[in-house]
View 1: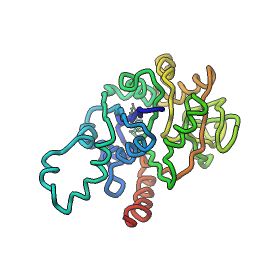
View 2: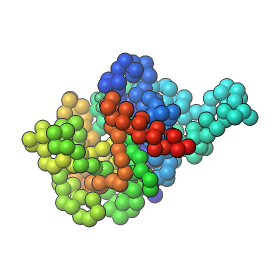
View 3: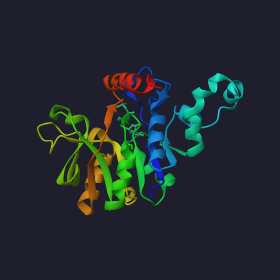
View 4: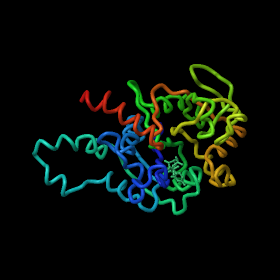
Amino acid sequence: MITKCLFPVAGYGTRFLPATKSMPKEMLPIVNKPLVQYGVEEAIEAGMNTCAMVTGRGKRAIADHFDINFELEHQIAGSGKEVYLESIRNVLDNGIFTMVRQREMKGLGHAILTGQSLVGNDPFGVILSDDLCINDGPGVLSQMAELYKQFRCSIVAIQEVPKDEVNKYGVIAGEPLKDGIYRVDEMVEKPDPADAPSNLAIIGRYILTPDIFDIIRDTPPGANGEVQLTDALQTQAKQGCVMAYKFKGRRFDCGSVPGFVEATNYVYENIYSKG
Ligand code: UTP
């Protein structure tokens, strides 16, 4: 059973400036709940109660969010407003939160490596909370944890995207096995659409085996001069096995303004308004 989930939340969120100048992108709310809380709820649902956050400068609000605010608790105790604290109290009752700071933002691969001290030598989940995943049945990370029991290797979540958008993603090619499961042969970060091996894009959910840390250590900076997780996964796929899984559910790219607005409308109409 996988019990830990890593949350790389150290990025600058430049696409949301000026909102993210002094506030973490992961605290931007979709309706009334911060993005990172949706991610934490998904991890806890998957049995990954230890939520390990890789934070950075200017991200203290995330640590505060996953802690008690005594003054607020005292102020509204016994009043009708307590209901508004229910979801975060639930998260605090069920989750354990650990933090480490990434001092230089050298890319997602580097952020994952920074989290090694928090996750140790066990397989772990990864959630990029700017990808919001919503579905009726088990969450995406639960679906992947179930698959892990079968394959015991790293798994990336994928979805089909329009060919002209592949340059925003890591893209895989692989052998289809069954039910949207592929054994990965090739992975490329942000390929030119003309050279992309497919339109199967990696989204922000992973299960990683701990040998990934040594591989990342040996991975030179790639696209954008950053240490890319995709490059390390490509090595892992060549050395052993990486699976890709076309998950069930909807995903919103909340790291971009249009995706964020789309998610807000969807959650308001389909979840918030229905209580
Ligand atoms: P993104 O590139 O989407 O996030 O990284 P960003 O850099 O915050 O956003 P923009 O492009 O400037 O608008 C994907 C995820 O990896 C994390 C980010 O926080 C985000 O969740 N990340 C990225 C880190 O934690 N550290 C890094 O050095 C880079």
